[in-house]
Image 1 (tube, one colour):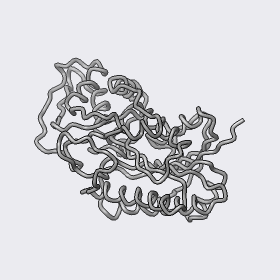
Image 2 (cartoon, rainbow, N blue to C red):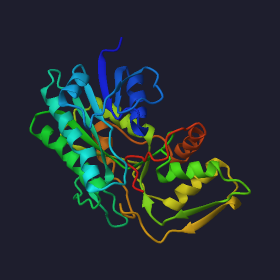
Image 3 (tube, rainbow, N blue to C red):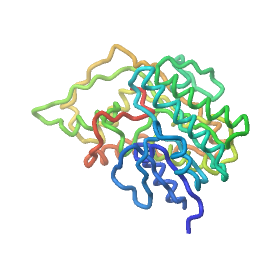
Amino acid sequence: MRDRQAVVIGGTGFIGRHICRALAKRGYEVLAIARKPAEPIPGVGFLALDAVSAPSEDIVRAAQSADLVVNAAGDSWEGDEASMTASHIPLVDRLVDAAATLPRRPRLVHLGSVHEYGPVPDGTAIAEDHPTAPRTPYARTKLVGSRIVLGAADAGRIDGCVLRVTNVCGPGTPRGSFLGGLAHRLRHTTQDTPLAVTLVDDRRDFIDVRDVAEAVVLAASSPVTGRVLNIGQGDALGMRELAWLLISASQVPAHLVREESGAVHSKGGSWTQADIRLARRLMGWSPKVALKESLHDLWAASATSSRPAATAARTEGH
């Protein structure tokens, strides 16, 4: 019998679905909350609720029996300051207020983004005490949300922590992200329609979505509160190498792919590498899924994926 209850905001999204599955496997009774229904997740309940605009009492009602609340919601990388603010800040305020007022005081695990640190010099392994200097609306508003959670925990209002996640890949990667889009284009590559792909010289830290879900499971029962924990592979992989790992997994002949060099780095900076030692020390977490396996599974899952092309990975910096 399941005696622990979890509510996952954004539970039908790319990362949220994997979190729901991981929690259900660990014995939680899980409720996924999202704006619109999606393909059902076995063993997981669903509530259609726009947590961004819903009245606070609706959120309190949905979470009133929860032992754990996970915020896996968020907007895509692109957007202006106003839309990013609306997506990332009021919801966190309401979740914190709900967690602070509920009799059971659920633990709150908030998913932040490595881009909250802002661009860093190449070669930097970013630890949690690295200064935050985000330069994009996405990163700035994500940082505000993380600070709301940390401030409430420091004040003793809630029991919660922030997982600052790097770029995410794996089965279900949305088509609006670089890797999801590349997989989609590879599925339509033929002798008559070869693929031209632009590759930048950036190096990024990518983590499999199932490792992110496992980090949430461990954070749910961890005594760590009021802290940021970096969640990533702990390595900076060249985007060219990453792309060719996916091309190899697709078994599309190399001669059908024409590589073009990209002259412009992304707005999120040309380098991300998370120092993940704190998560290992405080939670016993470390990445388990190799990127080669992650991209193989991404490719396999893309055969049946029907996720809309406009959907972007929340923690993808492209």
